[in-house]
Length: 188
Image 1: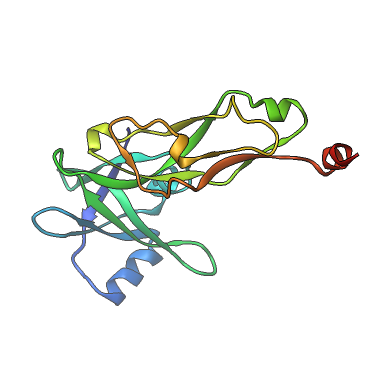
Image 2: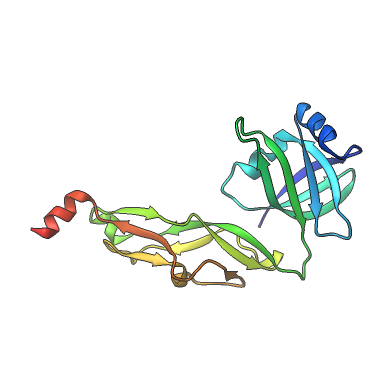
């Protein structure tokens, strides 16, 4: 898994007023869970650009006033109107404890249905995966080279490594849609 470093500073004032003051200074109040105790901190909003606005999955190396923690992004809350970041939760990683994450899907190969004029329609862009932190993949490759017109690839068709997929095995990941022009020719 790719690593991203975020620098944080411990919070002195907890509560609504303290969080509002931090947001007015372009900082984000954050919490780190999963360790011996919760750590409340804040970090500049600009540091979340690559972490939140990217389809990639990252392991975060938090540096809070000299103390380093390995963690993952658990949750992010946004303002309903102006989309600013209100709050971010992190989950501390332990080497022997499995974690559950949403991992992006990457399509590999060229589908014969696309070459015949069909369109590849992705149904799931991320899959829910449970694995140890060392075994967590950056992405899951889905081979679409066997998809013909009107066919789909399901979660059960994906090869699994040292992780388990928690999506329903019957859910389609991608399908080849038959264009309207070709549907009329097939009926004649």
